[in-house]
Image (cartoon, rainbow, N blue to C red; front, side, top):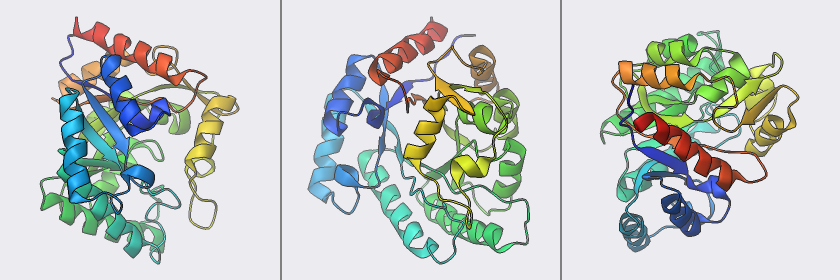
Length: 292
């Protein structure tokens, strides 16, 4: 097996700001980057047309591409119908920014998809994703749901209810290993028609965990990225570890991606650790070994 996919990194994982993070990504050998675009300097409400052009040129001058933007609005995802109109509009603006910067993928969490298809939460999520999917599809773009909160088969059954592929999948194998215990290799095969972006991350599942404790749930708790990072570094229920040190079978995972014909980015995410930059650089080399 010889990989041909390009390697990306999440700029925010370096914790040094966007432009310095972009330079660091280039320095360690990445070909593309993913950037959070919800608040702060990348908030689409704060970036003028001129600033967007300047940033796109800055990235191109470094010899990088944007693999995706991250438009995760946290909270309860799209489970709360009363909060959804504002979140949908924000998500659309993030996708507009993505297109201006040269990528057609925005990754996000939508909340745990409930089992009850007739319940109000399922309906709220379905209606929100339908609207977002139609919007994205009209632009030949994608909102990509990150795997992990529910098994792959259940996520597929939800996606199959939508009228377009405008809402698709950002496949994260470590989330599946750490939270649901799902098999990433089988997950790739299950979700093969929807995968438009991937994360490369490794992890260990130390005990069974309720996904609601990780990702939140309406009426239960809200999703908090800082809390998830703390959980992933505490070793109480699961632990995010450097590539090759966890339970993701990367040779089989990469082979499965090749088998389904996935041509997109392998984007490294490192949310914890004392020296994430060093871990990310090792991860780049780890993936490059599959390209030689």
